[in-house]
Length: 305
Image 1: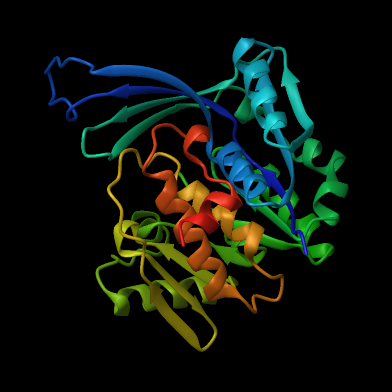
Image 2: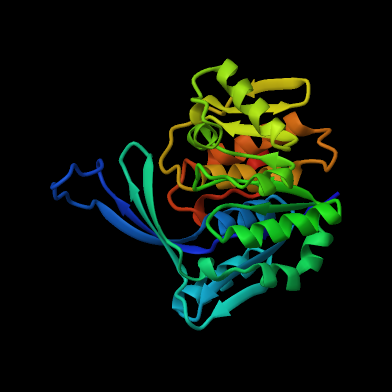
């Protein structure tokens, strides 16, 4: 059965600066190369879900500029329903400036632009896209009020909610967590949100227990090259990553989440298998440059097994 996935999230144009390593304070360095690619955490997750076969819709915003036109075309080219994306006259399309080091690691600077204009009213006006979905996903690159509204609609319609708490904030809304079925932070985000430093499986379990106490049903902590820690009531496990040489880690986490939503059963009965699939998709992503250009299709993931 094809999953229906709705994303409430960010749309950015990525400007990628390839460098040997991050500059020190006061240091001037040379850039090795420069490129522009479609991105944004929400848009990346939408494309990952769509390329893995999910029927995908998007609630978000772009500016009335060339970047916005490009992003709408890119999403439509990937079979993402863009009917609920608003074009804002007073804001530019979101931007991400990515400092990509030779190791494949990156540092990202975000300018929210139109992403900051996504509102609870816009979400409510498009609530049918959430009510009819199997999963609704959100991140922290759009306003909290819009995410809470989306998750309230989802809970009222038995749509599973997936929260990617990135960029992380120490002041995570308890109201939002009570509406969250699955939370997918990385190690740093999990530590920021729970106050528990992630160093081993014991600390991962402690962080998961804290999320459970706040209402979350499934905790998935992404561990980079070590894989994924997953926990639900009475169960926890580390699922290893696929070993590859990373070229660019920009959309790795977003690919994981979008692919997971395309594969996961609504009753979580195939949770481990869905994570294994998402790990394989993410491993393919880090072997290419850019966000959209690196996200694999279902056929590509299948061929990698």
